[in-house]
Image (tube, rainbow, N blue to C red; front, side, top):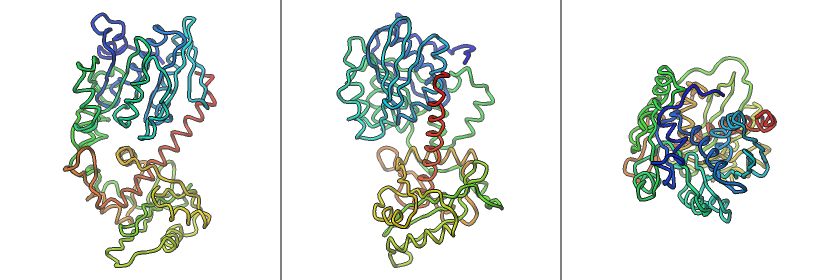
Length: 417
Protein backbone atom coordinates (compact mmCIF):
# COMPACT_ATOMS: atom_id res chain seq x y z
CA UNK A 1 0.00 0.00 0.00
CA UNK A 2 1.24 3.50 -0.81
CA UNK A 3 0.10 6.66 0.97
CA UNK A 4 0.06 9.78 -1.17
CA UNK A 5 -0.29 12.05 1.84
CA UNK A 6 -1.80 12.27 5.31
CA UNK A 7 -4.32 14.92 6.33
CA UNK A 8 -3.44 17.29 9.19
CA UNK A 9 -5.72 15.38 11.54
CA UNK A 10 -4.21 12.03 10.57
CA UNK A 11 -0.76 13.49 11.24
CA UNK A 12 -1.93 14.43 14.74
CA UNK A 13 -2.95 10.81 15.32
CA UNK A 14 0.40 9.54 14.04
CA UNK A 15 2.49 11.86 16.22
CA UNK A 16 0.45 12.71 19.34
CA UNK A 17 2.51 10.45 21.61
CA UNK A 18 5.78 12.18 20.68
CA UNK A 19 4.67 15.74 19.78
CA UNK A 20 5.70 18.25 22.48
CA UNK A 21 2.20 19.73 22.87
CA UNK A 22 0.35 16.41 23.30
CA UNK A 23 2.82 13.78 24.50
CA UNK A 24 1.71 14.27 28.08
CA UNK A 25 -1.78 12.98 27.25
CA UNK A 26 -2.66 9.50 28.52
CA UNK A 27 -5.35 8.63 25.97
CA UNK A 28 -6.40 9.32 22.38
CA UNK A 29 -10.05 9.39 21.32
CA UNK A 30 -10.98 9.55 17.62
CA UNK A 31 -14.63 9.62 16.59
CA UNK A 32 -16.62 10.83 13.61
CA UNK A 33 -17.84 9.79 10.18
CA UNK A 34 -17.34 6.41 8.59
CA UNK A 35 -14.46 6.14 6.12
CA UNK A 36 -12.88 9.25 7.60
CA UNK A 37 -9.38 7.77 7.84
CA UNK A 38 -9.19 7.41 11.60
CA UNK A 39 -8.87 3.63 12.01
CA UNK A 40 -5.82 2.85 9.88
CA UNK A 41 -3.73 5.82 11.03
CA UNK A 42 -4.61 5.03 14.66
CA UNK A 43 -3.52 1.40 14.24
CA UNK A 44 -0.30 2.46 12.53
CA UNK A 45 0.43 4.99 15.26
CA UNK A 46 -0.31 2.46 18.01
CA UNK A 47 2.17 -0.09 16.68
CA UNK A 48 4.86 2.55 16.06
CA UNK A 49 4.44 3.88 19.61
CA UNK A 50 4.49 0.40 21.14
CA UNK A 51 7.60 -0.74 19.29
CA UNK A 52 9.43 2.57 19.84
CA UNK A 53 8.64 2.70 23.58
CA UNK A 54 8.74 -0.88 24.91
CA UNK A 55 10.53 -4.22 24.67
CA UNK A 56 9.07 -7.52 25.81
CA UNK A 57 5.68 -6.09 26.81
CA UNK A 58 2.08 -7.13 26.14
CA UNK A 59 -0.57 -4.98 24.45
CA UNK A 60 -4.29 -5.36 23.81
CA UNK A 61 -6.12 -4.99 20.49
CA UNK A 62 -9.88 -4.99 21.00
CA UNK A 63 -12.86 -5.05 18.65
CA UNK A 64 -16.54 -5.90 18.90
CA UNK A 65 -15.41 -9.42 17.97
CA UNK A 66 -11.99 -10.77 17.05
CA UNK A 67 -13.30 -11.39 13.53
CA UNK A 68 -14.42 -7.76 13.23
CA UNK A 69 -11.06 -6.56 14.57
CA UNK A 70 -9.20 -8.54 11.93
CA UNK A 71 -11.52 -7.37 9.17
CA UNK A 72 -11.65 -3.69 10.13
CA UNK A 73 -8.06 -3.13 11.20
CA UNK A 74 -5.54 -5.95 10.87
CA UNK A 75 -6.24 -7.06 7.31
CA UNK A 76 -5.22 -3.62 6.05
CA UNK A 77 -2.63 -2.80 8.69
CA UNK A 78 -0.50 -5.97 8.46
CA UNK A 79 0.84 -5.41 4.92
CA UNK A 80 1.49 -1.72 5.68
CA UNK A 81 3.60 -2.58 8.71
CA UNK A 82 5.49 -5.22 6.75
CA UNK A 83 6.40 -2.63 4.11
CA UNK A 84 7.74 -0.44 6.93
CA UNK A 85 10.03 -3.24 8.10
CA UNK A 86 7.96 -4.76 10.92
CA UNK A 87 8.06 -8.55 11.25
CA UNK A 88 4.60 -9.94 11.88
CA UNK A 89 3.98 -13.43 13.25
CA UNK A 90 0.35 -14.43 13.68
CA UNK A 91 -0.69 -17.11 16.20
CA UNK A 92 -4.23 -17.59 14.98
CA UNK A 93 -5.35 -20.24 17.47
CA UNK A 94 -4.04 -18.15 20.39
CA UNK A 95 -5.42 -14.83 19.12
CA UNK A 96 -2.08 -13.12 19.42
CA UNK A 97 0.50 -11.44 17.21
CA UNK A 98 4.23 -11.23 17.85
CA UNK A 99 5.77 -8.12 16.30
CA UNK A 100 9.50 -7.48 15.90
CA UNK A 101 11.16 -4.24 14.87
CA UNK A 102 14.57 -2.66 15.43
CA UNK A 103 15.77 -5.55 17.58
CA UNK A 104 12.75 -5.39 19.88
CA UNK A 105 9.79 -7.73 20.27
CA UNK A 106 6.32 -7.25 21.78
CA UNK A 107 3.18 -9.36 21.93
CA UNK A 108 -0.27 -8.09 20.93
CA UNK A 109 -3.31 -10.01 22.19
CA UNK A 110 -6.66 -9.89 20.35
CA UNK A 111 -9.90 -9.57 22.35
CA UNK A 112 -13.57 -9.33 21.44
CA UNK A 113 -15.83 -7.09 23.53
CA UNK A 114 -19.11 -8.58 22.42
CA UNK A 115 -21.17 -8.65 25.63
CA UNK A 116 -21.03 -8.24 29.40
CA UNK A 117 -19.33 -11.61 29.79
CA UNK A 118 -16.42 -10.47 27.62
CA UNK A 119 -14.82 -8.56 30.49
CA UNK A 120 -13.73 -11.89 31.98
CA UNK A 121 -11.63 -12.61 28.87
CA UNK A 122 -9.25 -9.75 29.54
CA UNK A 123 -9.05 -10.04 33.33
CA UNK A 124 -5.69 -10.86 34.85
CA UNK A 125 -3.42 -9.74 32.01
CA UNK A 126 -0.98 -6.83 32.43
CA UNK A 127 -0.78 -4.50 29.45
CA UNK A 128 1.41 -1.59 28.41
CA UNK A 129 -1.35 -0.18 26.22
CA UNK A 130 -4.66 -1.02 24.59
CA UNK A 131 -6.39 -0.03 21.35
CA UNK A 132 -10.19 -0.33 21.27
CA UNK A 133 -11.60 -0.21 17.74
CA UNK A 134 -15.32 0.74 17.69
CA UNK A 135 -15.28 1.32 21.45
CA UNK A 136 -18.88 2.59 21.48
CA UNK A 137 -20.12 -0.86 20.38
CA UNK A 138 -18.51 -2.59 23.38
CA UNK A 139 -20.10 -2.92 26.82
CA UNK A 140 -18.84 -0.53 29.47
CA UNK A 141 -17.64 -3.39 31.70
CA UNK A 142 -15.32 -4.65 28.96
CA UNK A 143 -13.88 -1.22 28.12
CA UNK A 144 -13.26 -0.40 31.76
CA UNK A 145 -11.64 -3.78 32.38
CA UNK A 146 -9.36 -3.26 29.35
CA UNK A 147 -8.34 0.16 30.65
CA UNK A 148 -7.69 -1.23 34.13
CA UNK A 149 -5.25 -3.79 32.68
CA UNK A 150 -2.89 -0.99 31.54
CA UNK A 151 -0.71 -0.73 34.64
CA UNK A 152 2.76 -0.60 33.04
CA UNK A 153 4.51 2.76 33.58
CA UNK A 154 3.76 5.06 30.64
CA UNK A 155 0.86 2.95 29.32
CA UNK A 156 -1.70 4.68 27.12
CA UNK A 157 -5.25 4.14 25.86
CA UNK A 158 -6.40 4.43 22.26
CA UNK A 159 -10.09 4.65 21.29
CA UNK A 160 -11.83 4.89 17.91
CA UNK A 161 -15.57 4.83 17.26
CA UNK A 162 -18.46 6.06 15.18
CA UNK A 163 -21.08 8.07 17.09
CA UNK A 164 -24.09 6.55 18.80
CA UNK A 165 -26.77 8.35 20.84
CA UNK A 166 -26.10 11.37 23.10
CA UNK A 167 -26.90 9.31 26.20
CA UNK A 168 -24.32 6.66 25.37
CA UNK A 169 -21.99 6.02 28.30
CA UNK A 170 -18.81 6.42 26.23
CA UNK A 171 -19.88 9.84 25.00
CA UNK A 172 -20.74 11.01 28.51
CA UNK A 173 -17.82 9.44 30.35
CA UNK A 174 -14.99 9.95 27.86
CA UNK A 175 -15.77 12.44 25.10
CA UNK A 176 -17.45 14.96 27.40
CA UNK A 177 -14.69 14.50 30.00
CA UNK A 178 -11.57 14.56 27.85
CA UNK A 179 -9.72 17.07 30.02
CA UNK A 180 -10.63 15.23 33.19
CA UNK A 181 -9.38 12.01 31.58
CA UNK A 182 -6.23 13.73 30.27
CA UNK A 183 -7.19 12.58 26.77
CA UNK A 184 -6.66 14.08 23.33
CA UNK A 185 -9.96 14.18 21.43
CA UNK A 186 -10.00 14.38 17.61
CA UNK A 187 -13.24 14.51 15.60
CA UNK A 188 -13.01 13.22 12.01
CA UNK A 189 -15.09 13.96 8.91
CA UNK A 190 -14.77 12.32 5.50
CA UNK A 191 -12.79 15.34 4.34
CA UNK A 192 -10.04 14.26 6.78
CA UNK A 193 -9.39 11.20 4.62
CA UNK A 194 -7.35 12.24 1.54
CA UNK A 195 -7.91 8.81 0.00
CA UNK A 196 -11.59 9.68 -0.66
CA UNK A 197 -12.49 11.61 -3.78
CA UNK A 198 -15.47 14.00 -3.78
CA UNK A 199 -17.38 11.47 -5.87
CA UNK A 200 -16.83 8.70 -3.32
CA UNK A 201 -17.81 11.03 -0.47
CA UNK A 202 -21.08 11.80 -2.27
CA UNK A 203 -21.69 8.09 -2.75
CA UNK A 204 -21.27 7.41 0.97
CA UNK A 205 -23.61 10.29 1.76
CA UNK A 206 -26.26 8.61 -0.39
CA UNK A 207 -25.80 5.31 1.44
CA UNK A 208 -27.35 6.55 4.69
CA UNK A 209 -30.40 8.50 5.76
CA UNK A 210 -32.03 9.76 8.93
CA UNK A 211 -30.23 8.90 12.17
CA UNK A 212 -27.54 6.87 10.42
CA UNK A 213 -26.78 9.78 8.05
CA UNK A 214 -26.29 12.19 10.93
CA UNK A 215 -24.11 9.72 12.78
CA UNK A 216 -22.06 8.05 10.08
CA UNK A 217 -21.77 10.89 7.54
CA UNK A 218 -21.98 14.01 9.70
CA UNK A 219 -20.38 12.32 12.72
CA UNK A 220 -22.96 13.58 15.24
CA UNK A 221 -23.94 11.91 18.53
CA UNK A 222 -27.71 12.19 18.00
CA UNK A 223 -30.76 10.37 19.27
CA UNK A 224 -32.54 7.88 17.03
CA UNK A 225 -35.99 8.94 15.88
CA UNK A 226 -38.64 8.11 13.30
CA UNK A 227 -38.71 5.02 11.11
CA UNK A 228 -35.76 2.65 11.45
CA UNK A 229 -35.54 1.96 7.71
CA UNK A 230 -36.72 5.38 6.57
CA UNK A 231 -35.23 4.88 3.10
CA UNK A 232 -37.25 1.73 2.36
CA UNK A 233 -39.95 2.17 -0.29
CA UNK A 234 -41.48 0.27 -3.21
CA UNK A 235 -38.23 0.52 -5.18
CA UNK A 236 -36.72 -2.08 -2.83
CA UNK A 237 -39.50 -4.58 -3.65
CA UNK A 238 -39.09 -6.76 -6.74
CA UNK A 239 -40.43 -10.03 -8.12
CA UNK A 240 -38.27 -13.07 -7.51
CA UNK A 241 -36.03 -13.94 -10.47
CA UNK A 242 -37.08 -16.86 -12.63
CA UNK A 243 -35.08 -20.08 -12.67
CA UNK A 244 -33.17 -22.02 -10.05
CA UNK A 245 -31.55 -20.51 -6.99
CA UNK A 246 -28.01 -21.44 -6.00
CA UNK A 247 -28.78 -21.77 -2.27
CA UNK A 248 -31.82 -21.75 0.02
CA UNK A 249 -32.14 -20.70 3.66
CA UNK A 250 -34.90 -19.86 6.13
CA UNK A 251 -34.85 -17.26 8.91
CA UNK A 252 -37.22 -17.45 11.88
CA UNK A 253 -38.51 -15.15 14.59
CA UNK A 254 -40.43 -17.46 16.90
CA UNK A 255 -43.51 -16.41 18.83
CA UNK A 256 -46.39 -18.04 20.68
CA UNK A 257 -48.30 -15.08 22.14
CA UNK A 258 -46.41 -12.71 19.82
CA UNK A 259 -46.44 -13.27 16.05
CA UNK A 260 -44.09 -15.76 14.42
CA UNK A 261 -42.35 -14.81 11.18
CA UNK A 262 -40.40 -17.12 8.83
CA UNK A 263 -38.66 -16.00 5.63
CA UNK A 264 -37.59 -18.23 2.72
CA UNK A 265 -34.40 -16.87 1.10
CA UNK A 266 -32.88 -17.88 -2.23
CA UNK A 267 -29.47 -16.75 -3.48
CA UNK A 268 -28.66 -15.92 -7.09
CA UNK A 269 -25.35 -14.33 -8.19
CA UNK A 270 -24.51 -13.08 -4.72
CA UNK A 271 -27.95 -11.53 -4.07
CA UNK A 272 -30.36 -12.98 -1.47
CA UNK A 273 -34.06 -12.79 -2.29
CA UNK A 274 -36.81 -13.16 0.32
CA UNK A 275 -39.09 -15.02 -2.05
CA UNK A 276 -41.82 -16.21 0.35
CA UNK A 277 -42.75 -15.88 4.01
CA UNK A 278 -44.95 -17.33 6.71
CA UNK A 279 -46.47 -14.99 9.30
CA UNK A 280 -48.83 -16.03 12.10
CA UNK A 281 -50.35 -13.73 14.74
CA UNK A 282 -52.06 -15.78 17.45
CA UNK A 283 -53.90 -12.72 18.82
CA UNK A 284 -55.53 -12.10 15.45
CA UNK A 285 -56.22 -15.78 14.79
CA UNK A 286 -57.37 -16.34 18.41
CA UNK A 287 -55.34 -19.55 18.71
CA UNK A 288 -51.76 -20.31 19.67
CA UNK A 289 -49.76 -22.89 17.75
CA UNK A 290 -47.45 -25.52 19.18
CA UNK A 291 -43.78 -26.02 18.30
CA UNK A 292 -44.80 -29.03 16.22
CA UNK A 293 -47.32 -27.02 14.23
CA UNK A 294 -44.74 -24.31 13.57
CA UNK A 295 -42.21 -26.87 12.33
CA UNK A 296 -44.92 -28.25 10.04
CA UNK A 297 -45.50 -24.73 8.65
CA UNK A 298 -41.77 -24.28 8.14
CA UNK A 299 -41.61 -27.51 6.17
CA UNK A 300 -44.46 -26.28 3.98
CA UNK A 301 -42.56 -23.03 3.40
CA UNK A 302 -39.45 -25.01 2.43
CA UNK A 303 -41.55 -26.83 -0.15
CA UNK A 304 -39.13 -29.70 -0.66
CA UNK A 305 -36.20 -27.41 -1.44
CA UNK A 306 -32.75 -28.21 -0.07
CA UNK A 307 -32.46 -25.74 2.80
CA UNK A 308 -28.81 -25.19 3.67
CA UNK A 309 -29.60 -23.92 7.17
CA UNK A 310 -32.28 -22.31 9.30
CA UNK A 311 -31.36 -19.19 11.31
CA UNK A 312 -33.51 -19.01 14.43
CA UNK A 313 -34.21 -16.60 17.28
CA UNK A 314 -31.71 -17.84 19.93
CA UNK A 315 -34.31 -17.70 22.72
CA UNK A 316 -36.56 -20.29 21.02
CA UNK A 317 -34.89 -23.28 22.70
CA UNK A 318 -37.71 -25.83 22.39
CA UNK A 319 -38.42 -24.88 18.76
CA UNK A 320 -34.72 -25.21 17.89
CA UNK A 321 -34.53 -28.61 19.55
CA UNK A 322 -37.54 -29.90 17.62
CA UNK A 323 -36.11 -28.63 14.32
CA UNK A 324 -32.88 -30.49 15.01
CA UNK A 325 -34.73 -33.68 15.89
CA UNK A 326 -36.48 -33.50 12.54
CA UNK A 327 -33.13 -33.26 10.79
CA UNK A 328 -32.82 -29.55 10.00
CA UNK A 329 -29.48 -27.77 10.25
CA UNK A 330 -30.06 -24.90 12.70
CA UNK A 331 -27.96 -21.82 13.47
CA UNK A 332 -28.77 -19.65 16.49
CA UNK A 333 -29.05 -16.04 15.36
CA UNK A 334 -26.92 -13.16 16.58
CA UNK A 335 -29.39 -10.98 18.50
CA UNK A 336 -27.41 -7.73 18.63
CA UNK A 337 -30.26 -5.44 17.55
CA UNK A 338 -28.40 -2.26 16.62
CA UNK A 339 -25.57 -3.99 14.77
CA UNK A 340 -28.16 -6.13 12.97
CA UNK A 341 -30.15 -3.07 11.90
CA UNK A 342 -27.02 -1.42 10.50
CA UNK A 343 -26.11 -4.60 8.63
CA UNK A 344 -29.62 -5.01 7.21
CA UNK A 345 -29.74 -1.39 6.05
CA UNK A 346 -26.34 -1.73 4.38
CA UNK A 347 -27.29 -4.92 2.50
CA UNK A 348 -30.63 -3.47 1.38
CA UNK A 349 -28.99 -0.32 0.03
CA UNK A 350 -26.31 -2.33 -1.76
CA UNK A 351 -28.98 -4.48 -3.40
CA UNK A 352 -27.56 -7.63 -1.80
CA UNK A 353 -30.83 -8.21 0.08
CA UNK A 354 -34.11 -8.01 -1.87
CA UNK A 355 -37.66 -8.28 -0.55
CA UNK A 356 -39.94 -9.94 -3.09
CA UNK A 357 -43.53 -9.05 -3.86
CA UNK A 358 -45.29 -11.94 -2.01
CA UNK A 359 -43.72 -10.91 1.34
CA UNK A 360 -46.51 -8.54 2.29
CA UNK A 361 -46.03 -8.72 6.07
CA UNK A 362 -42.35 -7.83 5.81
CA UNK A 363 -43.19 -4.92 3.49
CA UNK A 364 -45.88 -3.75 5.92
CA UNK A 365 -43.50 -3.86 8.90
CA UNK A 366 -40.81 -1.89 7.07
CA UNK A 367 -43.24 1.05 6.99
CA UNK A 368 -44.13 0.72 10.70
CA UNK A 369 -40.86 -0.27 12.42
CA UNK A 370 -39.82 2.76 14.51
CA UNK A 371 -37.36 3.94 17.12
CA UNK A 372 -38.67 4.38 20.64
CA UNK A 373 -38.05 8.10 21.14
CA UNK A 374 -38.95 7.91 24.86
CA UNK A 375 -36.34 5.27 25.66
CA UNK A 376 -32.93 6.03 27.11
CA UNK A 377 -30.42 5.04 24.43
CA UNK A 378 -31.22 3.43 21.09
CA UNK A 379 -34.27 1.20 21.37
CA UNK A 380 -36.85 0.11 18.83
CA UNK A 381 -40.52 -0.12 19.67
CA UNK A 382 -41.44 -3.74 20.33
CA UNK A 383 -44.32 -3.71 17.88
CA UNK A 384 -44.36 -4.45 14.14
CA UNK A 385 -40.92 -6.03 14.57
CA UNK A 386 -41.28 -9.76 13.95
CA UNK A 387 -40.47 -9.91 10.23
CA UNK A 388 -37.91 -7.19 10.97
CA UNK A 389 -36.25 -9.48 13.52
CA UNK A 390 -36.11 -12.52 11.24
CA UNK A 391 -34.67 -10.37 8.40
CA UNK A 392 -32.09 -8.93 10.82
CA UNK A 393 -31.10 -12.45 11.94
CA UNK A 394 -30.62 -13.45 8.32
CA UNK A 395 -28.59 -10.38 7.33
CA UNK A 396 -26.23 -10.78 10.30
CA UNK A 397 -25.72 -14.47 9.50
CA UNK A 398 -24.86 -13.76 5.86
CA UNK A 399 -22.33 -11.04 6.70
CA UNK A 400 -20.80 -13.02 9.57
CA UNK A 401 -20.34 -16.06 7.35
CA UNK A 402 -18.80 -13.98 4.56
CA UNK A 403 -16.38 -12.17 6.87
CA UNK A 404 -15.33 -15.41 8.51
CA UNK A 405 -14.62 -17.00 5.14
CA UNK A 406 -12.56 -14.01 4.03
CA UNK A 407 -10.44 -14.11 7.17
CA UNK A 408 -9.84 -17.87 6.95
CA UNK A 409 -8.53 -17.37 3.43
CA UNK A 410 -6.26 -14.59 4.65
CA UNK A 411 -4.94 -16.79 7.46
CA UNK A 412 -3.94 -19.46 4.97
CA UNK A 413 -2.04 -16.82 2.99
CA UNK A 414 -0.75 -14.83 5.97
CA UNK A 415 2.93 -15.46 5.10
CA UNK A 416 2.33 -13.14 2.16
CA UNK A 417 1.82 -10.29 4.65
